[in-house]
Image (cartoon, rainbow, N blue to C red; front, side):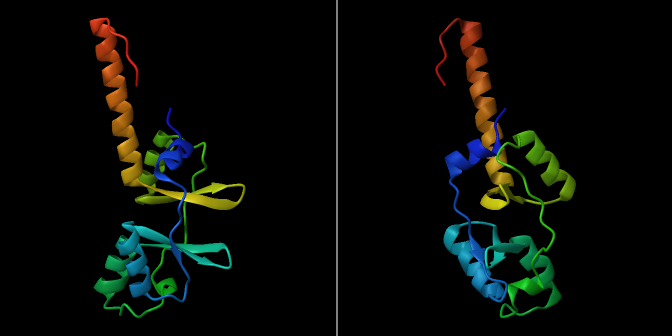
Length: 146
């Protein structure tokens, strides 16, 4: 089974964040520059929340809030985490059950990365392609080297 650690080893351990008093526009700029759908909201090393495109759409623009509003006013405060040893299946179950698209990865009380639903789907597809190729090789009597 593929684990979160394996996804992070491929994707990288970069964490994109803003401070709670940064504006919605600041957060959107960080997201756009790094091509990510969410940023953590961090103060003095403590994660206070997460701000996503969904937060902007639902609590920002649709509520008529200005992009100059501090991000802490519209961020999601309750965060679900996974560990590096969590499996893809556990991540998919949590994302589906909680209707979320991003999961910070917590190890020894510290966030070491963030995975998205896109990361999970990409990994599942890759895993399935390897399985199919292995089965085809087995059926045809060829050696398979992933």
